[in-house]
Length: 167
Image 1: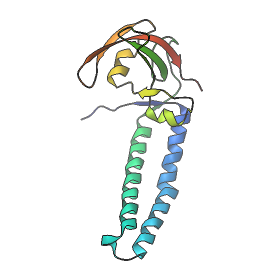
Image 2: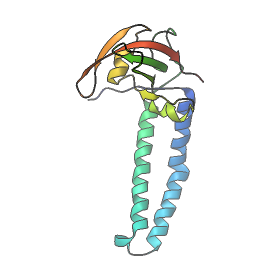
Image 3: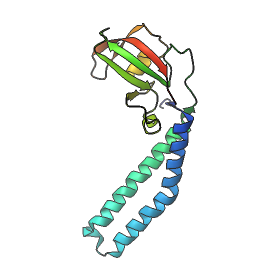
Image 4: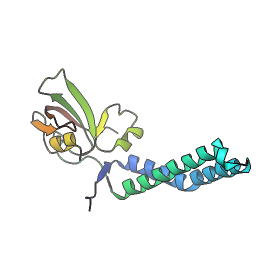
């Protein structure tokens, strides 16, 4: 049994995903059915590239529908909470690797789906469940934390700046 993975997002991101899901389940399915029907009308399906492409597109759309349904079921919707200088879901965090301010990264601690909603976001996104996300969660500016990168290497970062997601 797997643990439920909460996906943090703003209300705007949640609403955007609901709209996308509604489109895919309604007009999107109708459009792909028309493409498949038109391709079938061309004849021999075994050598019909348009038919196979439309079926592939349908499969990708159904996969996205399932992904959105799961994400929306597990979503935690709201604004960043906690003290302004403490890292929490929804924070934009600046970290320096090994304490070197010239070797730093800025990232959003939240859902990748936020990238399409807030056009001011040009940073990376890490989930709170990622190794870096878990390491910085609950820490404040000036704290140094370590985590194990996916390649097995131990990395150290110092939290330089924490900001609530601007809207």
